[in-house]
Length: 349
Image (spheres, rainbow, N blue to C red):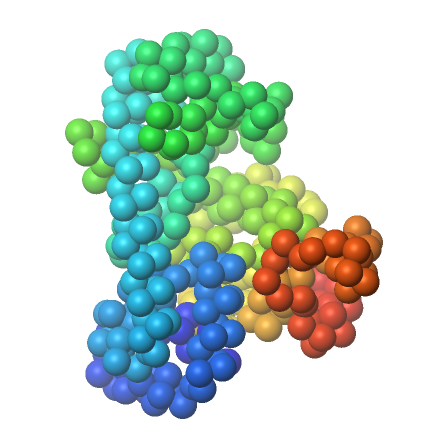
């Protein structure tokens, strides 16, 4: 599976012996293999990550030019977009600090700033952070002064969505149900930051971050399937801060319905990428059947169609009968439709 090779090389430090092994595997791939993997890389938002890995290993000559050009273009686009997001974040944080508010940063911006090897490789959409409810009025004034507007359509009872003139979006959470009643536990950490003009940022501490990443990914399964670029967040979190994960605190933070998913995901990382796990997490992982790369990509391809939910089958039937034009380029693979049932059975064992 070409996708497996690309992920493994992108997660491996450059080494002459390993690079030669990867070169042989890439050279054995057919044009059809490359076209199919290009679709998966785009769906899973992995193009910048894989381009970086190919470059580090010196394997650009093994990639068809049309595919390499696409990878490079998305890498450059991601680098530019991420820099705009980070520069905007630095300016807004400086203003909130001056107003006496220190937001807790979540997900993408922390991962890019602290964990990933290159600022382009982890694509970002919006910027998520959390504040106390009584700080919302102050923060809203800061955003208004900086030219941001509220996007009512995206605002929820728990969060306000602000959009800047450069189309940078901030998802400002003033209520975090996941951690309600657990405020007495250590939930945050102060980090030295590479963001321009800031010496320090506040983020979730590793155990709380692992909890949030798990709940976030599981919560988007029906919409997107298990996207690999979110799964890689776990790899880099555990590589840098895995030794700081507190098993007892994780027991108190993780919702009971998410333990099975976390166990299967961790076992997948251990089996598929040979990622070492902290003892408590390794024990959890081995209690559950691992996810597989094949099931992950299959579920994400089906999620584009709203499958396997009933409305997805109805939509697919309407397209097949010519009652509606498809909004995506390709119909689901026959093998995906046949094998999804086995994924469902595995998910509950």
